Length: 417
View (tube, rainbow, N blue to C red):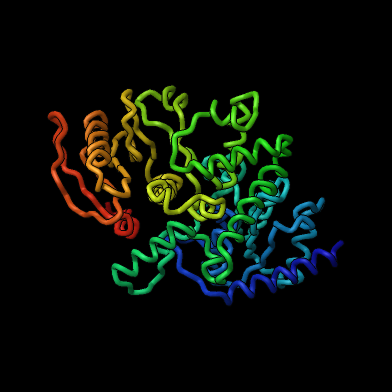
């Protein structure tokens, strides 16, 4: 067994050396405290670039294990891993563990190694590794970094581009999303992303949680991917999936959220119970998944615009910068995003691909102004395709200044707005 583990470690060492030589785009993130024994936790979707990010952040020699290999993940004695690492990497004290969630009782192993003064960097593709859960798993100090597929800023890189070139890049980003591998290796986006989506469903959810009703899980995933940026009823999903219980729908959605496929937004309410009971809006972690699963691009630009904005804001929420909601009143007037910081609503955002139709424009403005009055917030944005302005708008005595901004400009300057 020892020789087998050693051979696996050697093979993985070669793989990581190849990855170190590949093109790397600097991410809008960093690892804090790289050189001390605070456990560094990097989380995000599969294939979003966590490994590349880590190896480009660690400047010193490190030992590497990828627990996506079931031969290692299912070992009964984890000391065999350490013994193999000591042999292959000459007793280095910096350990990089990739996809740690696949190792049973990983937290016990990691805690023990930290007590032995190892410097640990771990990645995971399951949101159970989020900081809100880590405190129950890790006894020592830790820091957390979140890596999503490329943001638009990362997608365009450091190139100096004209405005028309930026808009062309945005069109590609809206359709294909931000997963790095197909971008760099020029492989077929649709085939790659479809395979990745299915792999997450079957490997990270069906297999990990021992799902019996596989067809129901498939039906839910396919329905949601066709209805991103939409308010969904659990009862409707239950009926479409042929399930008997809303509780099962909730459970399956939680699994998909934990695996970083989808995420949900609560409707804003000053009453916590009403937030919990209300329908959720559901978004996909990357537009490319929607594209890969036959989401028709030209017919759904508005939803793709909204989904990209949601992803950007969700990352900020996961970094604990903001709380994110949508707003809807009793007249079914809706605002896409309500941003809360502490006890205050600091920004309200409406996403509207086109304002050419006056009826659509008036509907979007009316909802934004009404939400502004109800939530006591005057920092109002409408994100558009190409319209940019700052205008006073009025609706039956509600007067507010609204900033209109093109999506590409908002994505490149999101934290400053």
